[in-house]
Image: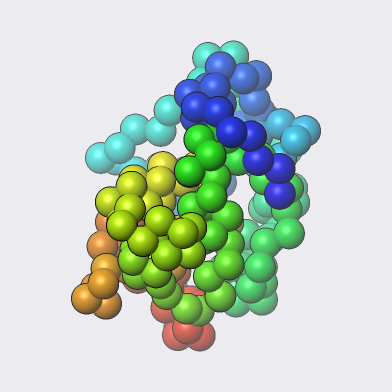
Length: 174
């Protein structure tokens, strides 16, 4: 997985291809270039999706992402192999890489995630980095829960987070 330590806003200045796809958890925006997927975002009525200036719509782009997401939602894929290009600060990249080590079907607390990046007192900062994850589902920020075991904070909504965790537990996914 390619990573670049710089401010996320740089992704919006790039010339990226993008498309929208439908999934069992709602409409998704995929954006990226030849280096990989830069963004996977939930399209929600209450939060408009930001498409960058100069981005080009490409209905046929991201066949690898479409295939792997389809297999994930069918319960057949536990770890994504597609190319992802993460752009963020060094701290964000450390958090996002730690997210990739949370096993399929498991959850960590924000405290667990903070300890994984060797910043045990930085629970709030870890939460901010988790929230800024540009490639939801693929970089599994949905696997992070509150220290009390409750579902908290998710860009796709807590209902979507619950459905993703249920899918990974092997529960019926409709």
